[in-house]
Length: 524
Image (tube, rainbow, N blue to C red; front, side):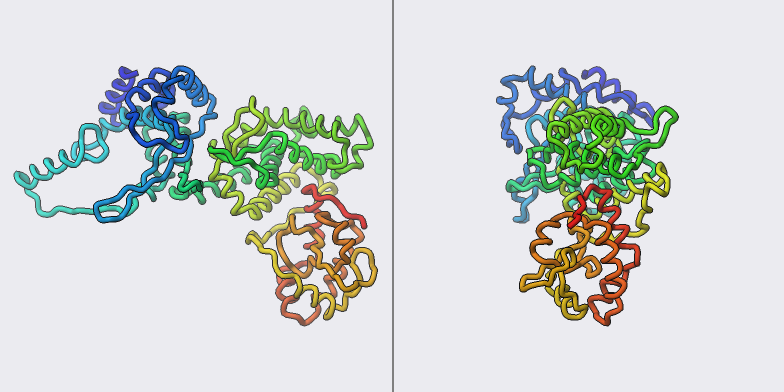
């Protein structure tokens, strides 16, 4: 191992622009054991609380397992434990303490990077270099002042440099000499590992974390991401649908494949079976993707299923469908979406029962759930327009408001509809409204996540409870469209504000997309 590192250093020192394409393999059992040997066992422990002695009790087994995870890309660094040490000026300096296993891997990476870059550093550079430090730097300054022609000395400090360095630019610098994708993948993993402070996880925000994640999602939604079918959209939607159902682990949020692909199967059932929408570009061999074929076969075996919501299918049959869909998705979807996200979205092992969503991605999804849902769905719809005829697909809404909405006090809408518009009967059953009157979202809040009077109707408690989180049938849609044509003529500030961006077909298009997304229908 040492011989190979020396050879790398020689190439780096003698080449004008050395490029290293294969160095990741150097992180093997021998190197990792050597790193373990060199580590100081007296140093503070990370969030795993594992010491050098404890790790060394089963060293061979631990190292073999570590190498395997590094090889299959299931390795996931733990967040660093943040502690504070006093500075000379009375302030405190934050330090990140890695877990012991991460210390081993970090030292291995350091050895490789040192071999590549140490020979290329200028002789006047002293910071963070082996066998160099402040004393050597002071001696150099003294020599130059004493015997050189020095006119001035500049003392400069970049505040919070290491906390605010741009990760993307740093990776670009590394890529100038290192073109081993595996090593770059590992370095990115550490840049995105985050920190743990007082039991609370904080994602690594600097280095354009938010912009970087947005760019990854935009790439997935764009035509640049290769798509023969809608699988990637389906998995993104399943992650968003289940985002509040994950289990917190030390290295991320855990989601079972059963949860993810259960929702995946349900969404596809509604799209493929109920609405007969193709999900794949015909390739000359088949018109349908494997998932579509699985669902169509299930429906063909039992024609009654065609008329059922996925939720209403008998449990045993439903689980059979989910199992087949999950098998196909684990083979074709999990890895494909992982690659599109440069490996930062989640870690996975198909032999396990689930995947672990990166904390940074999880936090991002929670913050931007509404925007991501809409972007994903409409990107999906655009793809469907390309592979379906106009008779099967309603056109995509051209523009959506992407602001994250808040639930409001609905009493003002109740008074406008009741007093100014003189709506005194339940919109659904037609019975006269009594003392208790509910303001109901015609298109469920879970889909629109917005409060506008054109989406509100007055309802009796019984009908509101029955409707729940469902979209009303076609007859109700016609009625609310007619109602909205009349109500927007009222001279009321709230009405005029809410109807500012309204068009006659808006609620109809939203109704269609709500059904396409799998929301069940309420028939009264």
